[in-house]
Amino acid sequence: MLNLLRKNIPGITLLQLMSDASCAAVAALLALRFRGYLPTSGLNEFAPACIFAVTTVCLNGAFGLYRRDQKMSFREQVGRIFFAAAVGAPPAYLLASLLSGSSFWDTLTVAVPIAFVGLLFARKVLVPPLAKTFLPHRVLVLGTGADARVVEASLASLDSPGVTIAGFYKLDKPSEVAVSPNRIVSSSASLEQTVAQLRIREVIVAVREQRGGVLPMQSLLECRLNGVQVTDIAGFFERVHGRVSVASLKPSWLIYGNGFRQGWVRSYVKRAFDIVAAGTLLVLMLPVMIIVALLIALETGSPVMYRQERVGQRGKPFTMLKFRSMTRSAEQDGRPEWAAVNDARVTRVGRFLRQARLDELPQLINVLKGEMSLVGPRPERPAFVSMLTEQIPFYAMRHSVKPGLTGWAQVRYSYGANIEQSVKKLEYDLYYVKNHTVFLDFLILLETVRVVLLGEGAR
Image (tube, rainbow, N blue to C red; front, top):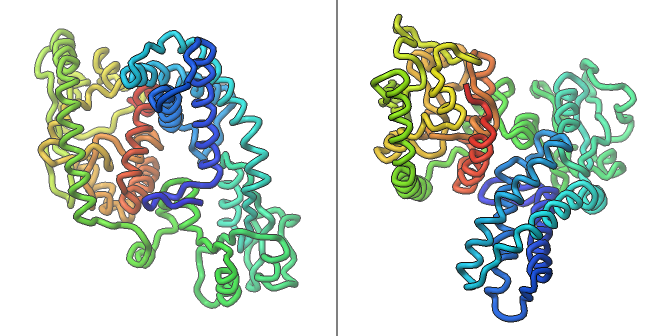
């Protein structure tokens, strides 16, 4: 596993990235050869292959093809792989033609089908057996209770060939058994002996209550010193699902754990990127914003802009801007309401704006003013914040960073419209607060492309 800027990249994902990039590059070179453009001299001749490979990998990432926290159906994979290749080819070849001074447009009809077949073959036929052979990851779960069952279900839901549960190790102190008795390994041998015999790479401690000598600490230390990874359930949940479990969260883990870094370099880089990106987007999207404003005015009159108080960094309120997507009488009684599925208050134009996320464009002004960032937890209204802070532990922690136009919760979870869904969203927000880096921001912006194009989570 590679730790890239505090973001763990599983070995299977690295293997998939390399195979996808290779397939795309080979497809581009074969297309050039087929069309008579032989790459015989100069690095510029290889520009289409390199750019097509990078663009394809980025789009695959945007469409969630490197996610390991959930299995994707074969039909979904086929559609997203083809869409990524088809969308990525034109800009890649356009840029390549500018760099090399030649025209490669006629190679698109060859490059896309070859890339599609190659990517699909690598993903379904080549990578899984390679991962199982060269990247085996055998796991021993310490515990047999409800938490152990959660670990088993989580690993079963992963799209990660090579990861297998070798068994469950029962603790000395009596506890409930929520897993299959057939999968409980004999505890006649010590934990470190069992780890060695079963060739275990990781021990997952699936025990929430660890006081009173419940855990064999000396054995766990021996495992750790022998190079075996030891992970508690909170760390496992964070790594596998990309969220911090509120149920297993303890103040001590927040105080002593890694992450939650707010260095000045990170803040300055993020602010500089926000200013440049938001300013550029505002200029590019100005014609679209003018058209949107006209459509809203024609359907329901003025005002076309909606100003709403939201809670920002460190709990400081600010006025957030949006294009109005609901009727002017949406909250006549003044009581805040969460948007519902097929909300009757949403206008026809507003429904389209929400699906395409165009109603959020005025928030680029909030980004330029420093009240928001491009990436961060979505800001909530003060009334909802007060209610959720009272009912959900650690809710106020999401305000330790600037709110964003898009965020980890927005690309990984749907709209939160009740307490239970707000807890799930908070878990993703806490993961971002704990692990936010430039690299994670880049991943979120990539996945935002998918969310916008596929209309995920809009209401």
